[in-house]
Image 1 (cartoon, rainbow, N blue to C red):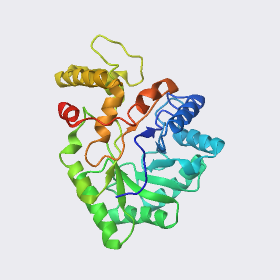
Image 2 (image 1 turned 45 degrees about the horizontal axis):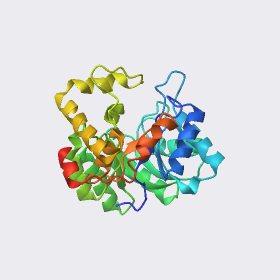
Image 3 (image 1 turned 120 degrees about the vertical axis):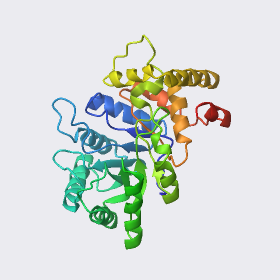
Image 4 (image 1 turned 135 degrees about the vertical axis):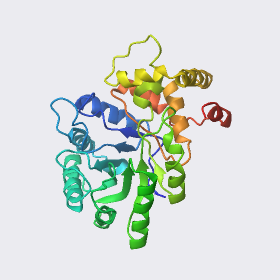
Length: 301
């Protein structure tokens, strides 16, 4: 179990340099910290998919914000290695080169959390487990995370670290939400057994769990296509009705209820969610102190 405090919500940095300009990103970050947020998640590959980008844009903007605000010791920073075209995979050499480049973009000399963005079966597990542990020993990172790993591969990686007596994975990051719950069957029991904290991405399922997607409603969003498809599943319409009811009774947004539900799930430390603009942030902040009752959790089960 990690002793790092992620707070009630981790702010996703995937919008920085994509759907959020530098100024918009700075404003969101300022408002998030002012509201009590203290953990930010990014990756070296963010946001290579946007026209004109090549990756590293999110880290660069975040690094400029950290430098301008002088608040590095007040926030936890997580980033990832594997998916950037110029730094692919989990070989020892690539991990070491990638972390140096991320640190430079982020304008910091350490990371609170460094993830393997996904598993790399072309590299012996001993190699990357040891490579990450070396970074911990050198003070370049505090914790090691595993994103998008199978339960079996996560278990063997942890076993290797334990056998060698070195730092291993203590945090996981996987897709998990009220409408994406596959990991409850296999991965969550494994996380609980290994004492690993889950920080799930996709907590609002591309905006669907904000409640803005409804039958007959057109949403102007870069993610609208995938989110709208979820309306074709009857259970999801029923879920929206329950979320509406709970949100109305509690006097909060559907977004806040969705995030609070996820934060209260076994193994979950805090959900990850992003805000494109400051105007989107208050609904995330509403979730910070929201604790759903046993009855409300049961209705959403």
